[in-house]
Length: 512
Image (cartoon, helix red, strand yellow):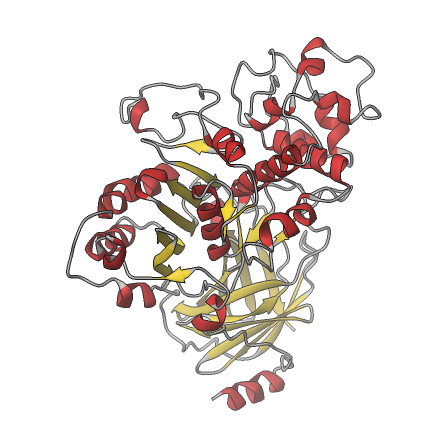
C-alpha cells in the first residue's frame, strides 16, 4: 500500500513526503516515572472511566491525560493523533516554569523578590520614573499585581524592545495592591533571570530542573532580543508536566535530592493576592477556580489544590491532600467546565474502590477524523492557479487515490489520508494558529501535522490539519465547480467564536 501511494504521489509531482511513525510506548517512557495501577494506589478505575465518558459526552477535546498517585503514574492516555513522545504548546502553563526559574535564582542569591524591577534595567527606563514604577518589585511581577492601568502584553509584543516598552506603560495603582492578569509581567521575570544569570530561562532551568527530572526536547519561544517569552511559548511533553507537578508535590525534592528549597515551593504556591470578582448567578465564588487566590504564577484551586494552567486547558493540578497530580493537555474554550469534570469524577476516585479497568479505554483514545467519502467526480489530479492574495499562494495542485490525497501549495506538499490521521510535516500559509503574536516566527514554519480528508458531498473536499505539537487545528474546505475551486480556511481558535472570521481570505482558483 505504501509503495502504491508513493507511485501515485510521484505521478502527481508530490513524491517527497515523510510519514511520521510514533515511537513505541516503551521508548517514550523508558526514562519516565514509575508506573502502577489505580487500584494498587487506592484509586477507582471506574471513576476514571466515568471521567473519560463525561469528556466524550460533553464534547470536551482532550489531547492527553496523566494521573499520578504516590509518585507513580496510574492512568495515562493520548487522543490520537497526539502521543507521549510529542511536545505540546503550554501557553500560560509556561508561567509556572518561569516562576520556578526565579526561585532557583533566589536560592542562589542572584536576586530577591523584594528587589525593585527598575534596578535591573537602568538603561531601559522612561525619562520620568513614576513613584509606582519605582516601587514595583519582582514579587509584584510574580503575583500579577504590577499596578498597570491596562494589560500591556499586546502593546509590548508589537515592539522590538519588550523590556523598554513594558517599563514605559502607565502604572496607575500602587504595586502589590490589585490583581490584573499580565503575561508581560511574566516576560519581565524571564528578562530579570536572564539579566542576573546570563542565560535564558530555558538554558538556566535545564541543568537545575529539566535534566535532573529527565526532561528533554523542550522548546521556548523568544522575543526579538533573544529572551524567553516567559509567560507563554514553552512546548513540552505531557510526562514532563507530570514530573514538574510531582516535583512541586515533593516540595522541590527529586530522587532524595533537594533541588529547590521547600520554602520556595510553599511560598510560590500559597495564596498571595485575591483576584477581583464574586458570586455569579450561575456560579458562586467558592466554586470558581479563577477566584481562589493567586501565588507566584500559580493558581489556587477549590480546596487545598493548586495548579499551573494555560489557555485552552493545559493543566498541571497538584493535590497535596491526595498525594496526587493530574495533568491534561487540551483545546477547550470552557476551561472551568473542564476542571469541573476533574472535581466531579477524578477527585472522588482517590481512596475509592472498583473492579473496573480503565487501561483498554485509555489505550484506545482517539479524536475522530472527519467522516465522508473517498470518491467524487472531482477527485482528479489537476493544478489550479490563483489571483494575487494575502497568503501569496499562486497555485495548488490536487492529487488523489483511493486512500489518500495530496496538495502541492506552491511546491510545498501536504498529505492527507481519508477518514484517518496521517502524520507528516508541512508549511501552511498563515499557520499554525496561535493566541499570542509575540515570539511568532517571521517566516512560515515547518509544522508537524496530522492530516485527514473527506468528501462531504460530490463537490466539497474537507481537509483537516491537526498541529499536534499545539492545541490547534485547521480546516480547509475546497469546493469544486467546473474548472474552478474555492478554498476557505477556518482555524480552531476562530471556530470557537461563531461571530469571528478567519483572517485568511477565501481563495478562488482556475484550472491551469
